[in-house]
Image (tube, rainbow, N blue to C red; front, top):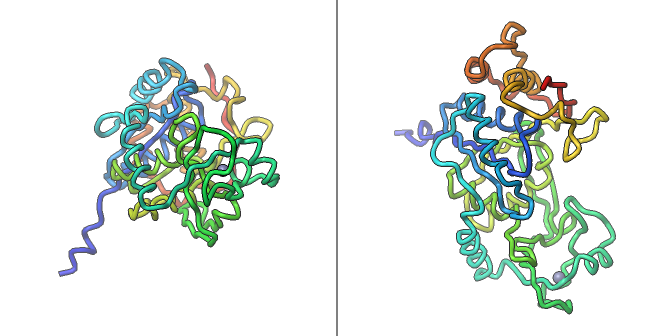
Amino acid sequence: MSSHLQDRSPTVGRFAPSPTGPLHFGSLVAALGSYLSAKKNRGRWLVRIEDLDPPRVVPGAAAALLRLLEALAFEWDGEVIYQSRRFERYRQVLQQLSEQGLTFPCSCSRREIIASAPQPGEDGPIYPGTCRRGPVGQRRERAIRLRVPDEELLCQDQIFGPLRQNLRRDVGDFVLRRTDGLYAYQLAVVIDDIDSGVNQVVRGADLFSSTPRQVFLYRCLQQPLPDYFHLPLVLGVDAKKLSKRYGPSALITVQNGRQALWWALEFLGQQPPQELAGAAAAELLSWGIEHFSPDLVQTAGQPAPVLSN
Ligand SMILES: [Zn+2]
């Protein structure tokens, strides 16, 4: 009678690293958080290589990353997805959005946008809508932007709570295809997650502010939203976000991987028992699956542990 109540679709989560260098602690936390959250619900866990931007891809990094995940006993479901093999799909969806009148070509240079929008937004200067009624710039190269509404969008995050953003005011019409012809991260991520049936997005809080743009894309594509879980930032020793300047002590290797996994459980607030430190990776993961509780994850960023190498 009330079959819809039992018919909750199984969890599909994913880990989506960029192959731009070796795995560091922040990525391990995202891998572990998404893995435990999916497996705790007996769901599927996918791995997607975000090699959308060929010049940034480091040759061999994706293969090394997958070998490391394997060495740390992570088991992904299905084939690994590579964004670089999906450009045709992105083109189709972009065309569909354009046919609906939701996009426009933009001929502004970055310098022109900065000149007319000196206020920095979530992700660079806020685009002031210059070309919304037709390209006005001088350049022949055109980016494709998505028209965004002047209204407050409400996103719910399972860890951080609600996030309100007015895309027009805080971001501006954002790029879906760059002037160099490459597809934008926001577009690719949403299409990939929709096509793979991902209904649970667990990732680092550095991506929290791009969530409203993605939520708006789901709306344009008339697709149901995934649940969002943003994990606390991993900070460097100087309490800055770990980025390209993370120290070698935060790099994950096969040798320090088990130690790093224990610290990642601790980082996620799961309080792994001390005697589990030094246990095999598979044992750490199965303890994590059994005990994982998203309620224990804190929002405050924390420094990376110093790992031995
Ligand atoms: Zn423009």
